[in-house]
Image (tube, rainbow, N blue to C red; front, side, top):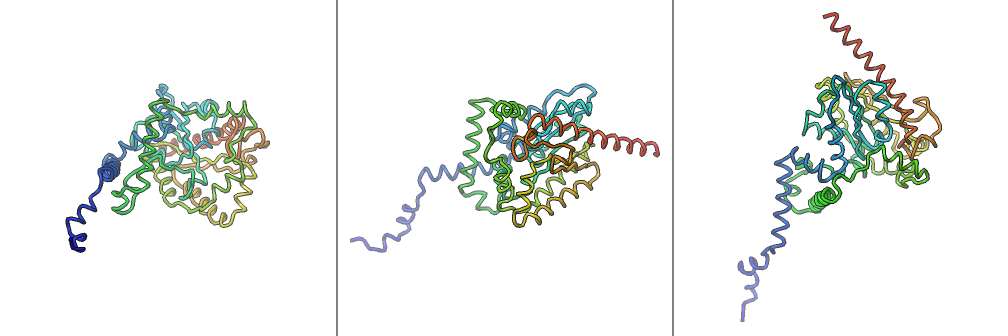
Length: 350
């Protein structure tokens, strides 16, 4: 008869704890994926961000790679869907005399585009002005709509366990990459440009995404709001990059519906978070080479009739975009002329 102690022998324990082939495969896959992200860095970000994980970024890269027009300065219009549906590219180009390239990404932030410029600095060649929107959701670390898994990097993880262990986050990231590969393989570039959404709304004016109604959007913008110091640093980094490259940076906030503003104001603790947000806006406005054109409601830009100019809480119709762009173009023109005049005065004194 075997001794009961034999079940605790080293041989028995070793056999009982032997990982299966499936466990070894899962562990190797997760560790390898994590090491790949850490070692390859921006190169992998470029592949995953532009072509695999996020089709928006693939379209953005195509847009910014457009051939430059000889002796015509470029103006990049970047940001979230709010600027994608709030700026009319041709109107702004006519006003400024620039080649205007609009590259909007759903829930985009400066962090989105800094990755692109880090991977390919040539995207900023010939650019004299940059317009990008600043939004409340960008400053919420718990925002359900911000970047998400658009980019995944080793630096985003704290502690060796999260870097190496096959946790749920690894599984989700691998699923996102697999989904992106499948989308790219089957559809090429399944992205609908923002301007096409105007046409869709004109054809179906009564169809509005329920998640974009003012009351729902206000709840999403404020739920579990935790102010993001990381985003403050990100905006500073973008402003510094533009200054180094000699690019005039215009930070804008297109108008939103009055009901959205009212519902935000009614949320507990919103006043404190809004004050922090406006402090960040003021700090940007004080930086050399950066101008903030912050508007909250249509009246701020001399417009009215919200029903005709908005699709939902803050995305504009084609008519609204043209009218807002006309106002914005004049403001940008004025500030560019003032900056050029100041530069000419300085060179004359020297």
